[in-house]
Image (tube, rainbow, N blue to C red; front, top):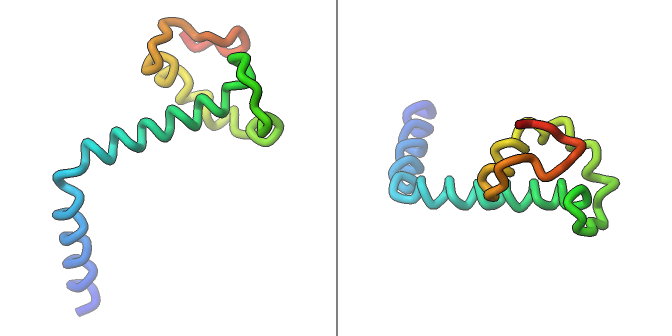
Length: 85
């Protein structure tokens, strides 16, 4: 009975999300872009008071950097320390 209730709830959530999937994906991508801008802002010349705390995130976010700078309209990496293209 509990398994059927979980399936019903999952189906209900799926029905509610279906018309809004593109909006949700767009919002998540915008949040990721803003986060990456904050993360790399010090390297781009924008002062970032949390720079010290974001340093440890670089190894995890470097893989997404290439896609980010292409979405932002930069053909080549704007950072001299990160060569991805």
